[in-house]
Figure (cartoon, each protein chain N blue to C red):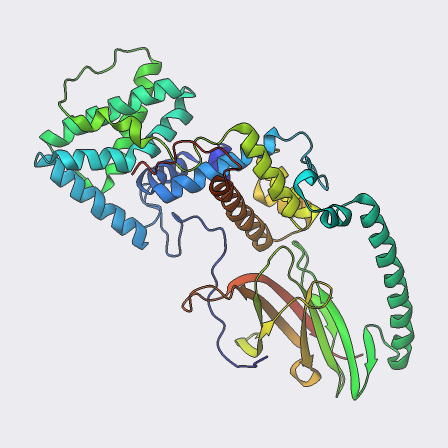
Length: 239
Length: 224
């Protein structure tokens, strides 16, 4: 063992989501992270896509669909509870967006994700109000191919396969207390503070358990795919 | 992510988070993974405290099934209880050598063991200041973590700020799952201290530092 007198280092908290980093700030909810490299990169991607689509670049339209398609589908499924409707609304969203971007740029081209989200939610509202969907005749192959970009690494895991992976995960947890953290959070849907208070653990331990459980769960799903124990179908990154 | 799935985010938070996963496929993958984990847990029949449903014994080697059997667990528990009783008896005998609690007699001086558990809502653990020549071994709980190496940093916290007193690395949970942090008495003068436990894996890149495991507050009280 070595002994040293050195200043304490700043620490990283495991389990911190990528979209929340040090130096975060909120601007009316529009910018959760101002300085993170990932955010800056996303702004550049957005602005570049908007500019290219405005110049008539059809490849840029396909790239936009590929980049935002999965997230948009997830958002719409969550809002509508209807997978088929979500697919239709996603297609409409891109149709509207492409039509708009071809004719005029966004006021904030770096916030393409926000724009797409707004369009999608407006279409959901319109559907819910039972108004006629927007009829367009946009000539673009990008929209027709959105279905191919809808699959992620876990999308085709069945319920039985999930249960098997979760059982393995629970077996590997060292203490009943750690298992209780997961069950209280995901089944009882308790707040983090309530769980920590009830089990007598601090936030650091809670974050650590959660982070490692998710990482281990990810490994179990991917390992099963490699060993063919879990039948994952259509493993297409879709990007 | 959990709060988003539970619908507990404010409108602003929800907007920001949805834009984040729209823009970043990695965030979306994490969100979907979290949702799958939640679905999997909800689909189990008895995922409650202490219960491990659907143990896949069929595919495990025989010796592993024996180790996992309730009979083996019961026998191990009995042996553990007996060893704890014996240890307690020896501990009480040793305590008489010094006349105060928590002291273990050893060659060349005395060493006392102080288990430290991080419990939310409680203040600093108070420990009486060691006497000259005495060693104090703080037992730090590594809990669920499985790092290859651990590092512990003792910092004295006072009105003038924080000062690092001692830092030890190359530690491992060799003492019944605890990490033993041994400190000579002269380093623990009365006052407030902070013990930071960090861990890292050996196969991490060189530029990736330690991750925080636990932070414990200790107060060294003046000797009575």
